[in-house]
Length: 178
Image (cartoon, rainbow, N blue to C red; front, side, top):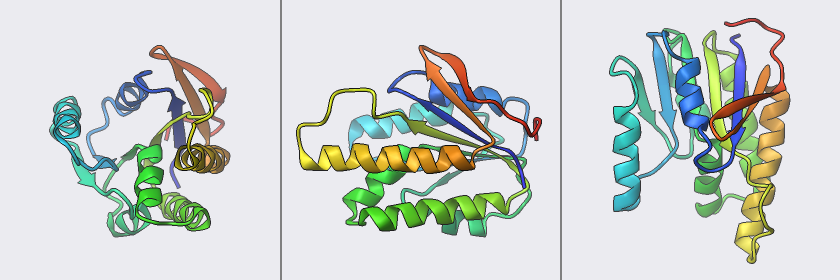
């Protein structure tokens, strides 16, 4: 079982850049993208992100079923990057999943991740530092995203919080660099 690092932060804080930096020098990387290119702007962002990753990395695009994807990925990878957890939650929420089902899917994904030998890096947004959303869906998203982040943080060996591109260690690693 490999080390799990959770990277949290606000929008545009440098979370994805930190994930890429942690995987620098690792050749066998699986990048699991949860973003769906639903409009022109998102499609452009996806292309920009892809261009910023080494070409030897393998990209998997999966907006909802991470546990199933992980179950099907062999152990040939040395690092798995999942970017991003909050988009996964949003995708599940908007597809009609109840909060309990979302938590179950996250726990199933963590269970599959723990079976892997590869180092894992998970990116997620910290959505609880801003104002309370003015609508029910926004509050539900904030609440379930916060709960999911807590579950993943507890399972993670290391947790980093990114502020203006700088990593703050929230939960120091006690497992080494694997």
